[in-house]
Amino acid sequence: MHPRLSILCTAALWVMALLLPGCIESYSPEVLSSPRQFLVVDGFINSQGVTTISLQRTIDITAKTPPPPEKGAAVSIEEENGARYVLPEGVVKGTYSSAPLTLNPQKNYRLRILTATGKEYASAYTAVKTTPPIGDVTWQASDKGLDISLSSYDASGQTRYYRWEYVETWEIASPYNPTVEYKNSRIQDITTPFPTRCWSTATSSDIEIASTVRLTEDRVSNYLLRSLPTTSDRLRIRYSILVSQHAQTAEEYMYWELLRKNTENIGTLFDPLPSQLTGNIRCLNDENELALGFISAHSLAQKRLFIGRGELPRTWLIQSGYESCLPPDTVKLYTGFKSPAEILKATFSIPGYLPINEVDGGYTARSRECIDCRLRGTAVKPDFWP
Image (cartoon, rainbow, N blue to C red):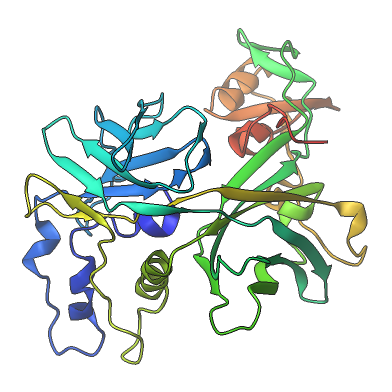
């Protein structure tokens, strides 16, 4: 689910205007504790590939748990007066994916959902749009940091409304490579070394949209997509960003623009008031059931960029993310009253506290968070990594 769309997973988004600062008394509307859980639909119909749809339920604004997935639903793509394509539920509950599809650009399509409780939903039929390729994804270093920009152009002039998402991946390495471990109440040579490299991934949370309706050409030039400070640990070794481009209809563009206003511009009396946001999905057998989300049909364009540490200014004080882990602790074995075995047991029986190397009179040690980079990512090298 898009992180900004998950903000809508509350039954009270459109009444948040009641919580503006400056009121004489605080007011908690009853809807905050409403038992109603509306359906949230996130994704799009991919006309040239795999379609993935995420279904979740709204939660109260005061809830401390993540939105629950909508499990066991029957999800399909329907061609108007034509074929039907099923999206089975995957390993991740609430996530439904199709086989790779090539849809007819001359037809209209919609998403249809039948929940396990018998509620039936459908999006409006929509025409298929073809997303133009991304022209360039470039970066520029300055005294303030790294700026990543993109350009795009549709010679046919048929796109006009654009939306972008991105996924960042970066390489990380802990400052320690333990040669010993505490096992069976004693220190011994390590049997299974910790990985020396891991990769962490983050998905964009900002809503990035642009329109060329007022321009003579359907061209986006040097759109600033992402900025990173000179100290960012994501730039420590190697950094990658995968940019996805979506062609949108005017209605879908307005939906995302309203969503952006609702999630970014709330906080002062001069900001726009939150607006009720539902999208183009309706419940067919219960008009009182609300669904949040907007389903469109279009192809997807992507482009990946890599940036290595050696390409960036040497003057940048790029952090590792492990600054709080330095230097390591030293566990001394001589106290005069306790045996080395007792000291080791008292020290390394602490959950998550691990030895690193042997030093004179003891061992260096640190918490697992400072040693095991898998706590910050995965040790499985991505297929696309050079």
